[in-house]
Image 1 (cartoon, rainbow, N blue to C red):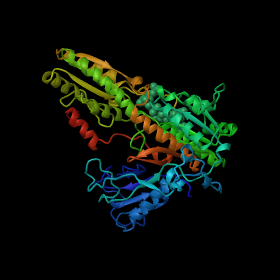
Image 2 (image 1 turned 180 degrees about the vertical axis):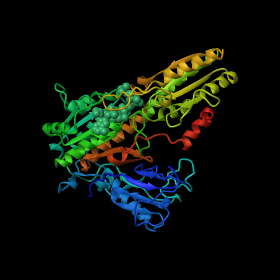
Image 3 (image 1 turned 60 degrees about the vertical axis):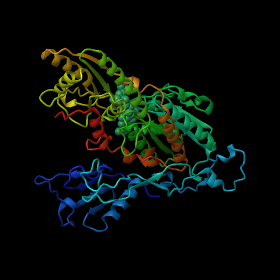
Amino acid sequence: MATSLKTSSTFCSTQQNRWLQPTRDLILHSSSHSNVKQCKSKKIKRPASLCVKATSSKVELDFNDPSWKQKFQEDWEKRFNLPSITDIYDLKPRPTTFSLKKNRTPTGDENVDMWNGYVNNDDRALLKVIKYSSPTSAGAECIDPDCSWVEQWVHRAGPRKEIYYEPEEVKAAIVTCGGLCPGLNDVIRQIVFTLETYGVKNIVGIPFGYRGFFEKGLKEMPLSRRLVENINLNGGSFLGVSRGGAKTSEIVDNIQARRIDMLFVLGGNGTHAGANAIHEECRKRKLKVSVVAVPKTIDNDILLMDKTFGFDTAVEEAQRAINSAYIEARSAYHGIGLVKLMGRSSGFIAMHASLSSGQVDVCLIPEVPFTLDGELGVLGHLEHLLKTKGFCVVCVAEAAGQDLLQKSGATDASGNVILSDIGVHMQQMIKTHFKDIGVPADVKYIDPTYMVRACRANASDAILCTVLGQNAVHGAFAGFSGITSCICNTHYVYLPITEVIKAPKRVNPNSRMWHRCLTSTGQPDFH
Ligand SMILES: Nc1ncnc2c1ncn2[C@@H]1O[C@H](COP(=O)(O)OP(=O)(O)O)[C@@H](O)[C@H]1O
Ligand SMILES: O=P(O)(O)OC[C@H]1O[C@](O)(COP(=O)(O)O)[C@@H](O)[C@@H]1O
Ligand SMILES: [Mg+2]
């Protein structure tokens, strides 16, 4: 099995940003004039608009070259290959101990393999299924100027027939990092259940995120099916969470000292970066440790996957806040309901909650700039709404309109930028504006921030957590490390962590979903 690749590729194109969105490692270079780019390679003597350099695999693509697609796919395969402990060790697998047959009355079925539904290492799922005919199609993600169809396969998740660990000898640890998220307990629970099904007896929880690896006095917690059986009935994390942390080398020292063989890491972008660093350090030290992540964040801001667990629940809760804002606004004379929703760098919660509630007149997200004042500004539109329907509801994402605010420059313990409060700012601006123009306006501001993430998972998240947690364990037993267990294009897959942490996922303002949101709110452009 080939080793994972650290990739950073360079693409040249004349169509800024319309191509190559799927992978984000393909960076567009702009030229000084006429939007024509220069290929850096001396070998390519043609309009640079049709060149691509994927430094990850040392492959340069020339869209005039008939074999460019094949080269792209070879590069893709290398990038999405799953790192494995077999890359550094010459290991012999053993037959899996994960068999559900023993849990049942024998049916007389002779084919145990069929019954258990093992996944083959060569099974793949397609990451993208739309063929865009033009880079101008809504939400188009094209690789070349003609938007050619290129298959982008990723590895299917699930139990393998052969495993690389002796379950009886395994010590498995679970850690939950970053902010809270509905479903953390569901994932912890399923990881424990699945580990026990394999026959693992030594399962521990690391308390309070990565902090549990270095803070003196924080002891690992032994976990078992009995102990975690009901933890999904509550929100939060049974193990506790935290931001910030020690150096990777200290964490790996601790992993070595505790003799951990499998580490399951639940968290967002930052946690994944940390998990990958741990995986790389273990690899450097030639440790037989599988580090498997499960993407957690209410923000839904992790690349390539359909959604992260907790997002659906957060949207459902956020919708309740919008509904309250609507009722308040509707019942007041010239009522304006204003709701601020979380999302560190993306507006997914605000967009989806606006769509699901159907009660929002203005949805503001960080991906789409807006002005408050002036002819095209939000305030003028609110005036219009009060005149025409008598009340209105505004939903603003926490990272929206940061350009309108003074930056504090502060960061949290993990190094994340602390955002300025757009909700409070808008509340003040709206009040001042209507006072200035002599129009009464009754502003009701709701900030449900922590309420949307402290609750327990809803039904759809609970199922997602169940599958992702189980698959994380299957991935570790299959010998993979430095991977994440997720859902892509409705299928459950493993992705190398390196591919999902290249940038935070953001709402595409050219996507159908954002346009659906605009259709639903009826809002104009605000800039
Ligand atoms: N680039 C990074 N490399 C290593 N560890 C990181 C990195 N970014 C964040 N972390 C660690 O990951 C944990 C969670 O990160 P944070 O950004 O707070 O939450 P999230 O994982 O939900 O995005 C913290 O303990 C933090 O120290
Ligand atoms: O106040 P806290 O706990 O630092 O968290 C605030 C942030 O946490 C989130 O809920 C989720 O962020 P993470 O996924 O990085 O944990 C963001 O929406 C929000 O900006
Ligand atoms: Mg984050």
